[in-house]
Amino acid sequence: MKTYYLSFVPPSKANKIKLNLRAYSKSGKRYIVPKDVSIKINKAIWELQKQKEEDPVIKIPVEIKIDFILPDRRKRDLDNIMKTLGDCLVYAGILEDDNLIFKQTLEKHIIKGKEGVIIKITAYQEKKITESELSKLENFKRKLDGTGD
Image 1: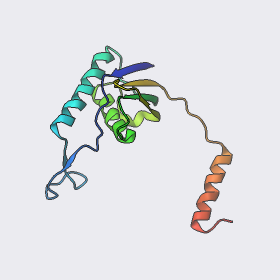
Image 2: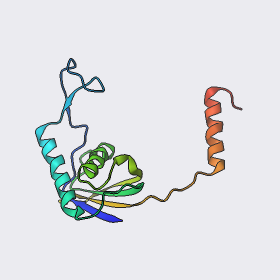
Image 3: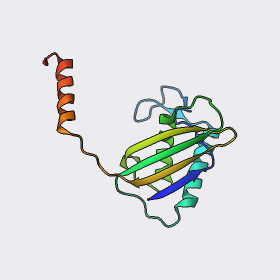
Image 4: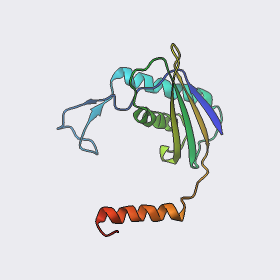
């Protein structure tokens, strides 16, 4: 389908500050995103929108391959960064909803002095799970329950 680029690695959604517990949100907790994190997220959305052109919003299941180019070996949690990227793809009008991501592959590349993200989005091709694998799963569950062999 399409490849998108970001000039930097967006911050993780985990970069938020817990507020007073007496102020409630749907989950009963309230958080605030620090200004510097918010600015970077908005920049990522802007960069994606600049590349979107007139492409229609994707409304079908997709597979996403993301290559993170990192300038150093500092610890980064790719799962949390992916949560931010999924939201950015929605806010930029690329994906209708991030629940359309059926498969994702995340990979780190450490290249001194370089930074960015390469996002490849293709239509998802479902791979069937075999009856043998389903049977093994059911056997495993029975063993956990104490009803199996």
